[in-house]
Image 1 (tube, rainbow, N blue to C red):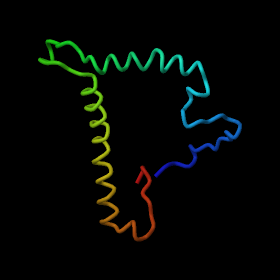
Image 2: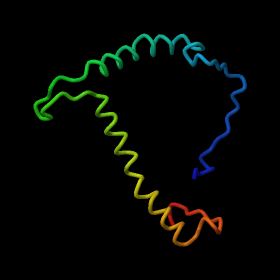
Image 3: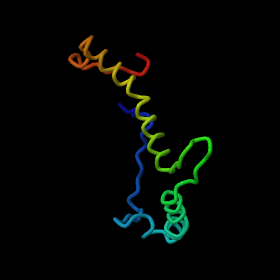
Amino acid sequence: WFPAKFVELLDERSKQYTCAGDDAVSEAVTDLVRGTLCPAIKAVLEHGMKRPTFLGGPCHPWLFIEEASTREVEKDFNSVYSRLVLCKTYRLDEDGKVLTPEE
């Protein structure tokens, strides 16, 4: 389900696209991303963090990223399960009806 009123068609026929990505089109993007951002992110993810006293052990930033993403995904599990139960109970899928968020 995706609200069509938020979709906007773009005419990008005059844009330059390449399989190498934006850095092949724009030199400024290459300098910023490849030269500054990527090495900084790599250093943080490879180094980890020093042992904080309140956590009791080493804490790598990647572990935090995984935990945060897992919690975001799990938040929607109950909503999806509830919709599935409603659809099966009232046979909404057979009638071709789709529940809106208000329903």
